Structure formats: structure tokens, C-alpha cells
Amino acid sequence: MNEFIEITEKIKKGKLISPPEHLLGSIMQKLSERNSDNILNILFYLRKLHGYTFLQERNAPRILTSKECAFYFFITGLYYLIVGTVLALVLKSTDSSFVSIFYSLKLQPHLVIGMAILFISLGVLLVSEVKAGIKAAKYGTILYIIFVVINGLLMGGYLHIFFAKILFFGFVFMSVIIGVILSYAVRKVELRMTQIA
Image (spheres, rainbow, N blue to C red):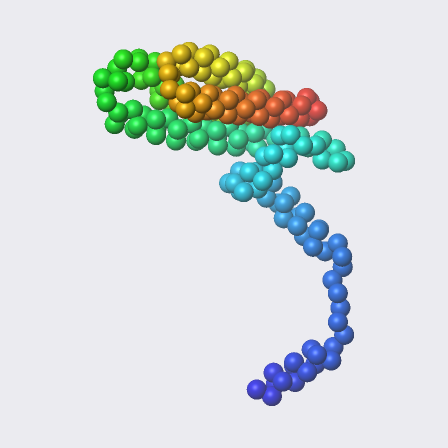
């Protein structure tokens, strides 16, 4: 026990040395650089989604890599897969005579799951980093926005309950916003590919 007392006394009498001011910043920068290529680091990509998509860094614009953009397509595909599955389960438990009256209502879960497959497929194409995959993501996102607007206008005519219309058009508006964000992200990937070439 006396050994520890001697050690603590030496520590107390020792000179206090502060670490360099830039130490913490350089360590954090190295950590973020090390994890930037790791597609499984979900928190890193989610934290950077807003900044990469809308904001510019002070010194230079941040250009999205195709793997980061593919991650956003995978997340969107997963979102639509969950929404489509929940919608299918809800319509399955609903009165079948009500659902059979509106054939287009019966199609909605299939369309939503189809969108999920579309986004996951576009994400796979973006991971490959080929120009054809980036073009497919660009035009696929534009077609998605057009399809969502047309489907929203057609389905909106079937809804006669005010709150159902508000909820439905809120979902359509959110889907269009998702499409615009993904389209802007694909444009940043295109910009990066033109700078590399």
C-alpha cells in the first residue's frame, strides 16, 4: 500500500502539462476520415445527410460519393418497404367489400412496395459507381416524383373525408420532398463524377 502512496505523492508534486489545443480536433478529424468509407456507419451518414444535401461547407462545396448517395436510396427503399407492408396488412384486415369497391386502393400497397424495390435497385446501381447507374438513379428519381404526383391526384378524388385527404396529401407532399432531396443528392454525385473524369 505504501507504494501507491508514494506514486500518488509523486503525481501530486509533478508538473501539470496541458495537451496541445489542436489535439482533440485532429483526433476527431482522423476518426471521421477513417469512418467515411464505412457504409455500415449509419449514424455518420444520417448526421451528414442534411449537410451534404443542402448546406455548403465554408471553404469548398462538399460533393457526395456514390456510396453515400446509395445509402440514402437504401434508407428510402427500407422506408417504403415498411410503409407498403403496413398498408397491405391494414387493407387485409379492413372489410373486403370496401376495398374491392376501390380497385386503385387495393393497388396502393403493391405500388409502394414497388417503389421500395425501385429505390433499393437504384441504390445497388449507385454502389457500382458506373455512369449508367447514376443516370438510372437520376431518371428513376424524376419518374418517381412524377408518378407520386399523378397517383396522388388520382387517389385524392376517391377520398371524401377531409382529414383523410389532409393525411394523404401530406404523405404525397412528403414523398415529393424525398424525391427532390434524392434528385439533388444524385446531382451532387454527377458533379463529383464529372470532376474525376
